[in-house]
Length: 152
Length: 152
DNA sequence: ATCGATGCAAAGCGTTTGCAGGGGT
DNA sequence: ACCCCTGCAAACGCTTTGCATCGAT
Image (cartoon, rainbow over all chains, first blue to last red; front, top):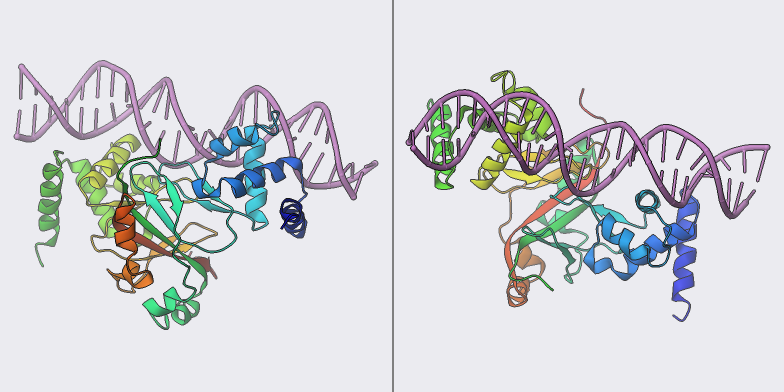
């Protein structure tokens, strides 16, 4: 517990090196921003502004490259923003999202992830997909709608 | 049945004018491409190339504006592509999608849409969301994975 | 010494906008 | 006559790339 930050760091080192990538302070800083502000699912620009407080010399290009590295080593996933800009999610457990159609804001949902939702929806679907040449890895569920009012 | 094309056309006219928008041959042509090639969920560029066969003088900007109009009048929805480019879906019934993580290819799923999936997942969630100021309009479910081989 | 990572600037790509001309209501 | 729509070109925003330099192994 008291060692949480450094054990996270080792996790990140290991994941990066397992993917043939190197650990760097920039990647660590980007990862820390994602872990700390994860519920916000920040955009690359927001991550850039946050991480600049720790590493004032970091460039936006490096943030993008760090995000690629984090995605490649499985520590982060990318959410498509309908508005064009991507959002990032470093939670390591599967979960659902709530998306505002007006602002693009994305939040995590507390509802626990059901590993067999697809099976419940259509028993046999997974097998049929496999037979048709589709290797199912998982699913994404998004609840869409409007927030009555936005936070300040 | 034999009147399908023209009744589609009237539907489109009505939907557009209900939204305060005008019917134009360009919008009709874009809509027809979407209806005809819908399972492919084409990108704007692909729609542009298709529709050019009928209207050689159409511009890409007009295609984008037509897509905005079709979305605004409810005849089409926009799918976010993780690669940045959007894909479009003119099916008028709710349904699920299959997405290839490698190529971005999107297909429709035959499995019927369950209007109460959210309620089954977490009874009371809809009410809780409403209390927290979120007006739920619907949900999106995507099965993600890899196609073993791509079609020629 | 090698090889990947950084940071800067420039390019790339999908999409949007400004604007003059055109057409339906 | 009005106002929306088209088509062209230019602008835009997010993301990627080229390249010289840096740093770790």
